[in-house]
Image 1 (cartoon, rainbow, N blue to C red):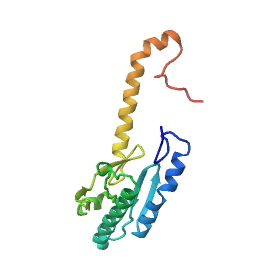
Image 2 (image 1 turned 120 degrees about the horizontal axis):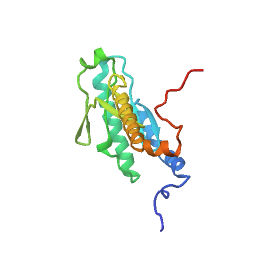
Image 3 (image 1 turned 180 degrees about the vertical axis):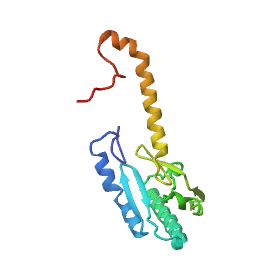
Image 4 (image 1 turned 135 degrees about the vertical axis):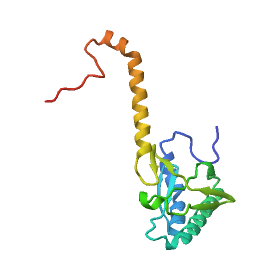
Length: 171
């Protein structure tokens, strides 16, 4: 198979080449005064807000930044997935309710503020309480313990002294 663009999926050079290829995204973010983090093909754009006086200015800069990134991506035969684009405002619990909801107009689509987002497998809510993350981990652990419980009788036949539920004795 002849490749006209990109690198083969799974290539050891893929991540490095994509980082070099997508470097202009960082320049676009800097141009608009936005901070950013990139991991593989995920990019988080953020802004620290010390005062609500410049809320409208930040909204305008975010919209312009997203538009410039979308233009760059189209020029380079990439697509910004609007369905995966999320917006969240982190603030102390006592301020979250008093903040007006942030909405961005992005290419004719309104991006509404989310109350919780997932970043690299970690749930982050507006107040960074980690409640949803704790719930997800608890649910996963309970599911795994149930799975172990289903095969418990088979394990004890093979390993009679094996117990997942045994409490380790101190010292």
